[in-house]
Image (tube, rainbow, N blue to C red; front, side, top):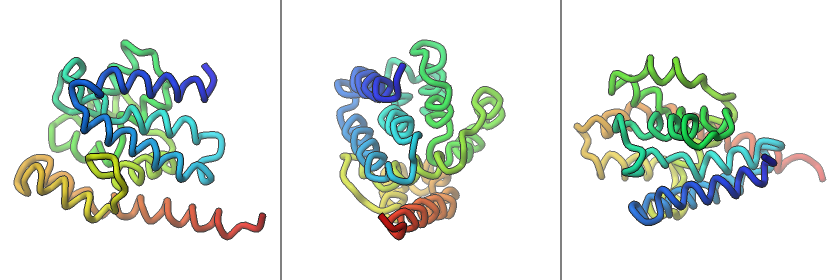
Length: 190
């Protein structure tokens, strides 16, 4: 499958799994994919790969896929076992936005890492940047407001609230690394 074909396939699959049962989650996923397109200049040949992973990153929330209750793992397993997705897309979905920290809190870190090796750090940074710069409704935001929104939605003492606060320094570092790469590309002479 061509990379462009992979991206079209990813949008179609994500829409079929999210649009009707979870319309807000679908709008968020489309927004994350829009952020991925906005940083395409730093991604080179991996731009379409990241856009595909961005639109698919939250499919594990779909009621049809939710098995463990840990959406990165549920989504990655579906992409591997049912959808036959590209291995790199699967790994990005499995490890998006510091998923290893949430997996650890859920007692699933060994399972996650045994099944799905991490993708290249520049791509995991890029997907984290896209996710954490997108509101639940798909609009642009910044990672500090996004972390606060997540902690507020789930509650500060919940598993998700605790995880997102623990992950915040890495989320901010990922965003900074992406912004440094974007700035470096903009500084290059035409």
